[in-house]
Amino acid sequence: MYETTGGERSIEELEAAVLGALDLYFEAQLREVTESPRRMGPAVEAYEEARRQLVEAEEELEGLRRATAELKADTVDAVVRGSEASELEEEISELQEEVGELTQAEKTAQRRKENAEEAIRRAELDFKGDLGQVADEVAALALSKGEEIDDFKARLEQRFAEGRTAVLGAAV
Image 1 (cartoon, rainbow, N blue to C red):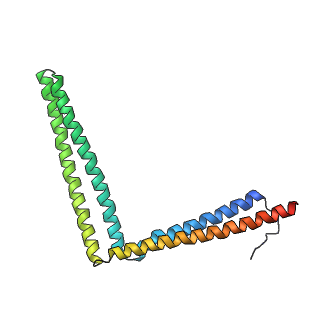
Image 2: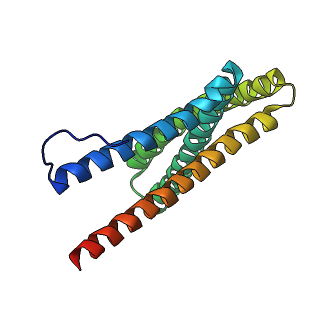
């Protein structure tokens, strides 16, 4: 089960080798979980992409709405400051232009959101109502991988405990 290289290796080299092997193990487990939706079919990927686009569009809309509210507050501030009429006209004109740009950006983001929602509906139809089942299967795989890791961790802890006992026994 164990191979020797014929030479003595330092504890640091052995620790690095163990940690490197653990990194590879966790990468393989993570890869299996992240690739599982793709194995379910292209509709899962389409659904996930549509969900990502929906979240992005909603976040953009929220940001645009905040910016619009700030601009409206700036407009009120400009009026309240009571600058000269020509200055006030210029400030309001600039603010109106910015509001117009924000409104256009909000319409574009709203269309992207609607497109993403439609893509989600189409993906759900592709699954004929089984999308929840597929999501459950992906979650079950992730849970089983977590359990495999916990079992591996328990075996690893047992090995370390045995090694510690052996080292302490040799010291006595």
